[in-house]
Each structure stands twice: as structure tokens, then as C-alpha cells.
Image 1 (cartoon, rainbow, N blue to C red):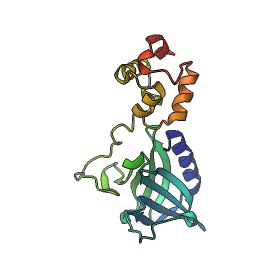
Image 2: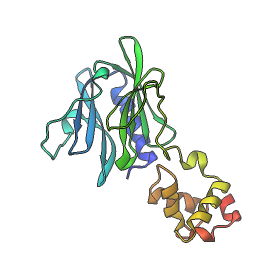
Image 3: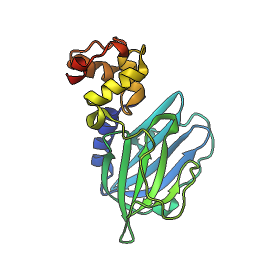
Image 4: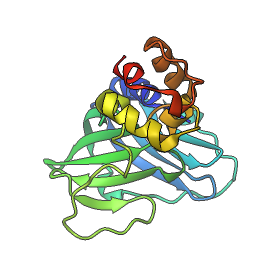
Length: 219
């Protein structure tokens, strides 16, 4: 599973490669459970992709010629209303696994949201007011609905992991190992990051949640 830190690296690469680039194509592979947007700047062609396969999900930024599709299926185009747009900005939202690609087309602003949140990942096409216009995977929405991160995506330790939240989680998780409870309760963490954070706080990551007291939580 990709973490919020992985996404930060992908955003940094995307900023180098696709700001100022034109969105010239899109490909959705249903069996592969993957979708790609293609960008062209000068003679360089770059792809920003999303995979939501249970055995390997996440985002990727790579040269368009390096994409490997194993299913041999014919791709479906998507987000055709964004073709021809010029990318103006790329950033990560909510310190988590959500990437926003802002663009301009015919002097109108818009954005693509890439939710690299695992098997539930998705992509959205928005207008300049953050209103939903289209979606990659079938999700119901009404005309005029504003985009909001998927449930749980904003639960990241940079904003929400404090003494009260840790104690609350520890009480409900009880016998579960602390590092595993952190991964389950906060988006964008994996086992390694959870263990690292607990070790830096001088807490044994293999402690059971019920063993955490207020002094531990304060550290």
C-alpha cells in the first residue's frame, strides 16, 4: 500500500513533468483496474496513473512509453472534456493520498482529483468551483455537488493524532497491537511509518492498545 509519503514524492515528480503540459489522451483498462491520463510538453510524454487492484493499488507518474498492460484489452477513453487542457498546478490534498491536477481549458479552470486510496481509489473531473462533472468509477452524485475527500481520507496523523485521539483509539482497539491500530485508523500510514512514529515517541509499537496510558499518549 502506498502511504501519504509516497504520494508526496509522486506529486513532486508530477510537478516537474506535467505543469505546463497538455492533457492529450486518457485510457481506462477495466480488467487491469487501472486508468491513465497522458500529458505532452515539448517532446516529452508523461502518464499519471491510478491502479485500484486489490493486489497492488496506488498512483504512478512515469514516461508514457513505459506503461505495461497485461490483460491485452482495448482501453476506454474517459474525461474527454479535459482533453486539450493545460496543467497549471499539481498538489496533494489533506496531507493524504489525494492528488489534485489543476488545469485551464478555453480560459476556464478545472481539476482532476486522483484518489490513490487503495482498492477504493477513484478519479474525479471537477470544474473551477470544485463541482463534480464526471467520475471514473461509478459513484452517484447530483448536479452541483461539491467534491469532498472520501470517508476516512482526512484521518491523517499530521492533523488528528493527538493525546485524546490516541487514548480513544486505544480504548476501542483493546488487545490489538498499537502500530496495527494506527494503520487501521489513520489514512496514509503503513506498518513501517506507524512503527517509526511510535518509536520516536518512545512507545513500543508492539504494545497492546490497552497498555497505553495518558503519559504515553502525551509523548
